[in-house]
Image (cartoon, rainbow, N blue to C red; front, side, top):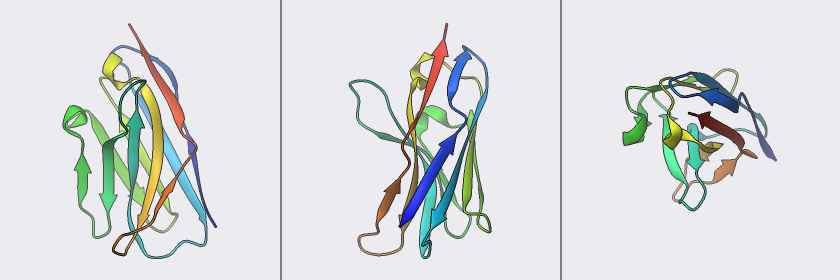
Length: 118
């Protein structure tokens, strides 16, 4: 059983910053990536950022240059530093962990709300 617990969401003003954190626990092995996705009302869930085994990272186009993902492999944690937030960043943010395999298995956190006010 794998559990992902997120923290750090909330209300922030336009142009502000926020940091999300996620800690994984349980029977963890064979992690391919850890990262963050988000889903705004009426929209599909989209990739925000992920850290892939080996050190590479991927970012969604809309957050490049503003968000930074960091991962601690020893602690099985991943964080997302979000800067220059705008209204389009308002969404529920989900922590994700994917295992190796074809296909790999996805684990999800419960989600944390991020709201950017004008």
